[in-house]
Length: 215
Image (cartoon, rainbow, N blue to C red; front, top):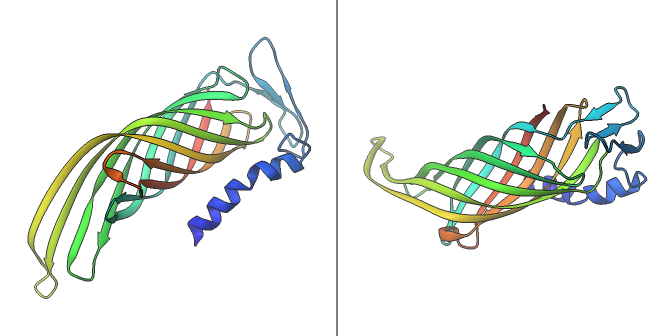
């Protein structure tokens, strides 16, 4: 329910941004600087130029690994990356992260493991204000290391275990918000989805919050 509510909220963000006069911020508009390629954020405290040359970000959140026969498990997601924004509304980023997943079945079977992702993404921002709604899409590689264990719940021991390792290409899509705390520090909640390869139709849904910094 929480994930569904977050998804609906993020999908409604473009309407919310449009309501605030098209800038996505009631504090005031954003004016450009042709020489540096940055933007001047006006109102609410600290006006200044946002330098879009390089963003460094770290993230954490939740994800779930799915296969064609169902979910393999869910758990915490940790990652980070680098981003550049050579155009006022369009940017590019490279990210890497790991999902630590686990699922326990009543039938004494346990799935677990990790999924490591490296992806290149393209972002489109709907405004240049303190609150910037964006959509993101990309291509990447996902490496999964899965273990299936058959347990004896009475003796609390593992009767049998088997492993599987896969590496395959994935595509992604998502929506998020960049909320500037200062002209260099920002918070990025995002809902995204990765699919392709052996993941079938379920794929890898992901809900993250990132902290970014512009150098």
